[in-house]
Amino acid sequence: MNLSQQQAAWFAETFQKLVKTVGSVVLGKEDIISLAFVTMLAEGHLLLEDAPGTGKTQLAKSMAATVQGTHHRIQFTPDLLPSDVTGVMVYDQQTQKFEFHKGPIFASLVLADEINRASPKTQSALLEVMEEGRVTVDGHPYEVGSPFMVIATQNPVEQAGTYRLPEAQLDRFLMKTSIGYPAIEQTVDILAGSANRNASNRIQPVITTGAIAEMIALAGTVHVAPAVLRYIAELAEQTRENKDARLGVSVRGAMALTRAVKARAASRGRNYVLPDDVEDLIEPVWAHRIVLDPEAEFTGVTGASVIQKAVSAVSAPQEKDATAQ
Image 1 (cartoon, rainbow, N blue to C red):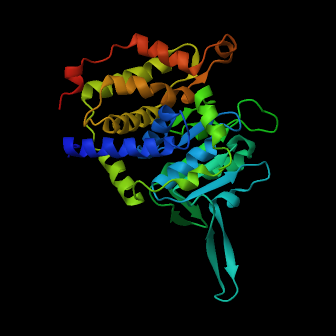
Image 2 (cartoon, rainbow, N blue to C red):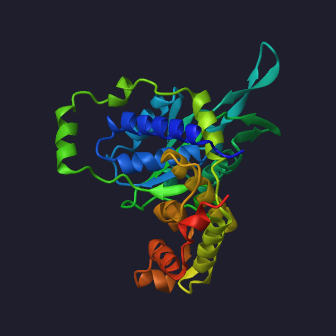
Image 3 (cartoon, rainbow, N blue to C red):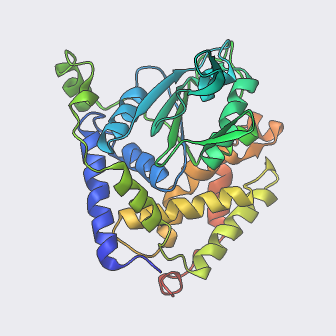
């Protein structure tokens, strides 16, 4: 059953309330906040590549507060162990049994700070939970619940003592973007309220986690016409055929974009996807998935430029074809 127009209107209204509430703390970054909530409602995860002090922690805490969710922050370091993230089995002398003590990954929203500072072994501990929403310890699966979202950060400046995220890890992130520094006007407002360092604590919940789960389900019912699906498939094929790309966008990447554009369309009060939704989200969803040829990368080619070349090469479907049921 497709999303009704009444449900789409409620979805868009609630979405704007969420963005506005977080925007009262993370000033001047409504576009990034919108992308973050689209990621959440598409059951994805967000990678922020940003310098320290740009509001990444405030974004994560504020998002968790708006949806009555729990929030945990994990500081990734070279000596962090997988069990420090997922949890560990502890022997209880009274019951004479091993009991599972949950790690910080069990939260509605998890901030994985400086994820590239942890060893590949620890990074791999996130692969299962980010893909399947569960942790397996000693053969027993433990569900993390819904909603569940990881916001990971990495510093693009300091590379000493870091481990580059492997392609399999990058592919688990629905989107990659950056918050960036605020404009002068917003910086002045931030400085005026600098005495309150925990502004996110003032946020009142806008919606329950149960309602967020309902929004996630509704986003999945947004109609995507065959012409739009073909458009996404042809764009992915173009990235794979580009001589500057050693590895283009996979089928998983195409599926991720499809989920994201459904959530974006619903957030705008529509029960169908337009080509504009695809073009708005294609770069943050796909750019980090493209592995460039080293020589091309040396000459200045980026994942974004490969995507823009693909968009220029593929004709977008007409609106009448995009809205066909």
